[in-house]
Length: 538
Image 1: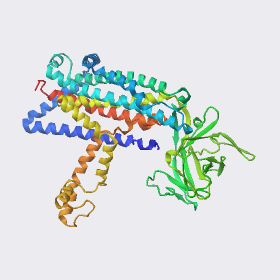
Image 2: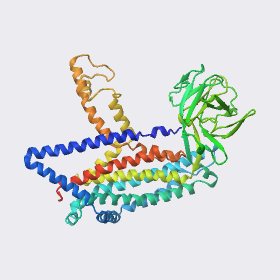
Image 3: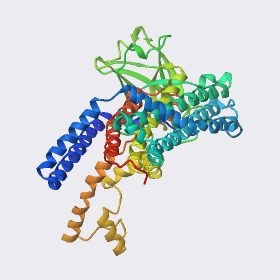
Image 4: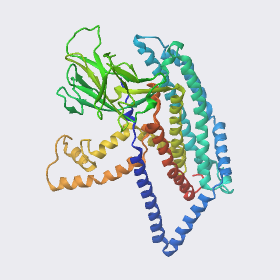
């Protein structure tokens, strides 16, 4: 098993640029289509109508009343309470009452690995349960609020008051977010208490919140030449590359941004690894393979090698290296003498056993900075669930302003499913052309002629025209990729379950930016829908 935070990395700057392009482009298209429609249907009078509508929108935006928005938010919360939305606590309580029957007790195992797996199960169970119970509640409450008001005609008493439609949309979103927030706070507090109480006192140290510093990995082969990958020992899963023992082969890491903060209170640099071992011959099976860690400063050619260490066979192993080391009659400071001017630390790992191999991947070695408290990472993961709840509330309210409750629920739920990693990966494959079978017309042609997707199309002008026509849907697919959010960074459970802190730049910042990016379009979409919608029960 492994955990690679790089898989959760979202290039939010590139995504933010795409959001600006897509949002700005769609806004201009809507304005142009509205203007042209009014110009064609009403002539010169349409220009005045368009101007009055734009002015009315600006008036609504700049006339927002926090007091009215808060009143509508409070009303939404009370409606959810009266409709027994908070009854989800009963289901949550039942889950925790009987969870111990199926999960089992935490027990000590070899190298404490059984306990680690059990604690990981506890954390994953709690955070997943909170997510799965909170999101449906917000989905249903958000999608049925405005349609129910229209059906019961209670919205008439609101729109005839000074309350504006924009305030109705904002009030609904804030009120539903309040419902989700209350549910999250209570469930989060109970879940944290349950995890701590379920973990035995002698295993409390497993509730960790590591703060790792990862580096870039490269390899040197047995001839001393740099390579992007090591040796493949025949494993189909090529996640790890291997280096050969007792040769020039090395694995090289460069850790960037290294300074005094990586040293713990006792003056040690903590290197944690989970290397894998591959034996080309049986040898002494009672002894683990040996490796060493070498520090190199390429600017002044200094080097220092720690004593040989034993591989722990994919288990976490902590090597504590003192900051100040002695090599013969020379004394070095690993921070001052080995960290370069560009603030990176060069580390090489080698296998010491002849004709044996040690495997590693990028996340298999990292500098472990001083740990945070477990509750820090746990509540960051709860914050990630809260961001998902907020996003669903905004999308659900916007959809409910356009269509009825059941349709809005299905629309929002499908939108949420398409935001997952698998759906986005599939869209990426379609966009890159990695999926065999071609575009729509080519697929229809292959089905009609019973042609296998692996067989090339005939080389003639008709097939060439068909391929060019198939390129047109790619633009629409790219637009869908930018409109549908990527919720990969919202899932912070894996960090906490594996004992890591939730990084700000990898998860919290991009997730927050996604929610903020959807706030304006969702609010304006719901507002315009209520402006042009007949507020009567149909």
